[in-house]
Length: 142
Image 1 (tube, rainbow, N blue to C red):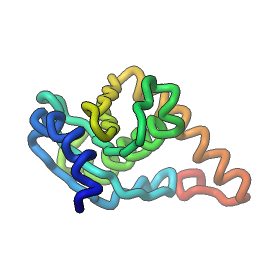
Image 2: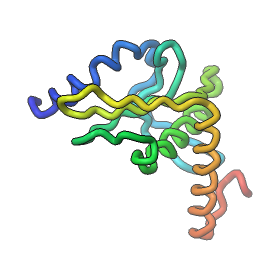
Image 3: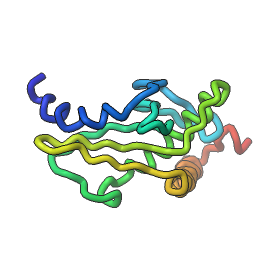
C-alpha cells in the first residue's frame, strides 16, 4: 500500500472539488454503436457534471497531445453514459482527466463540450471503421 501513497498525495487535493458522485467503476454500454466500458467515475467537478478518468504516470504529461487516446476514451465513456443512463436524466457534456504523479500535484485536464464533441466524432469514426473492417454491421445500421 505504501507504493500507492505518493499517487494518493498527488490526487487528494483534486478530490476536494469532486462532489455529487453518481457512479464509480460502473459498466456502461452504447447499444447503437455496440461497445461497452467501465467508467471510473461520474460526478461533479467544481459544480459541473462530468465523466472522470483517473490515470497514474511517473512524470507529467504536460499537454493534451501527450495523453494519446485518453480523450477518445473519455468521449466513449461519455457517450455510453449518456445513452445508458438517459432515463435518469443524465446528460454529460464535460470530461475530467486527472493524472496522478508522485511527488507532484496531479495534472488536471478539463474538457469543455466543444472539445468533447470533436473527440466524440473521432470516436464514432473509429468505431465505424472497426465494424467495417470486421465486416459486421452494428445493430443501429441494420
